[in-house]
Image (cartoon, rainbow, N blue to C red; front, side, top):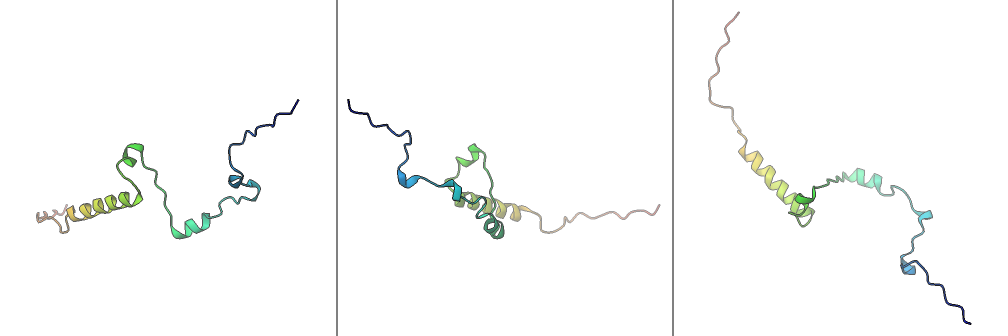
Length: 86
């Protein structure tokens, strides 16, 4: 009788194997902190409205522009009352 070859349970190709003993934890952490990278997690319903981070940034910049333009730049013209000395 011929022996059957054992079938490997590993479905990955050999070029995709990774030696985790050589991995470095937090390798790019300092660079990200230095560059000021921020990560914001969007709720799923909000994320569906945007195709990528550029679209989110454009929408937020538009919102900031509207918010700045709608603020009163001068004080109201209402006269103030003088306080009476007590």
